Image 1: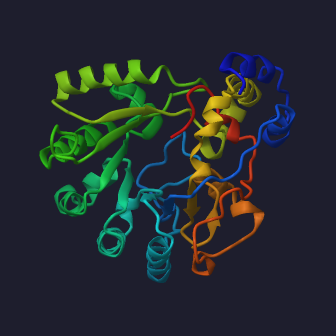
Image 2: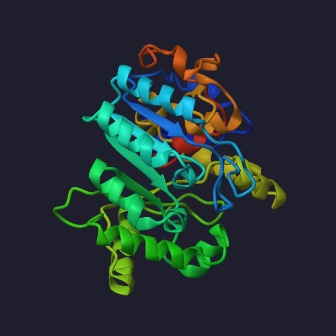
Length: 327
């Protein structure tokens, strides 16, 4: 196993080399382990149009998972024996079938962990109390996107008024016991940089967020996870517009960490898109690259993908292996 330092020195010389080729040259590979997480993308409709969104989700997107596909996904979750059901979007809170889907998953796979990735403002728009009551009863873990604790920085990334609604949503979640000691109701925050740089140290970021959110807003949470922005969608367009795409790719490749490669989420996760087709991860879903390179519908799957099977890679994969990696 190479050290992070030696990997980074080699990767700094990256100049357009594909991720797959780079791994091969380093004697490394990326294949599946036991797939235990079923990630479900309910659609691309969102109340925000974040500048870092790799899916180009927003208010004008109409793609949403239909009721038949929701049923097929729930059935696959059950027969596949998945340990985690990870619900995302777009803004999954805006999908009319979200709450019945959560209740169905809880009934059919009671032992599974259910995660919901929330942008917070959508949760507030949909009626926080009614939604969070269902989340609480099902023991849903909430993973909330909160790029910054400064209003100006967050709204530059997510839009005017989003900071206030995010704070109110977090306070509402706390009211139901989320993020509070002893409740077992997990509330984690996801932090993305505002520009073309890697995220700061995760522990230091968590400490700063914990102090700021508690002291100024009385908000508690469990963990902070820092994530690099993926050079896709709106963020890629912004990088290209600013003439920074190549430099950012060099930065990602130069921070390659072979230890992070061991824990990338695609090794234990399969993503199902709003149309019911399977992908190796949510980023491949955004690019339309099917799982293993072959288009397969969730209704055709009798079990999780086989350990050792191929994972399709691209240059966006440098993001998940830069520094501490991607959760």
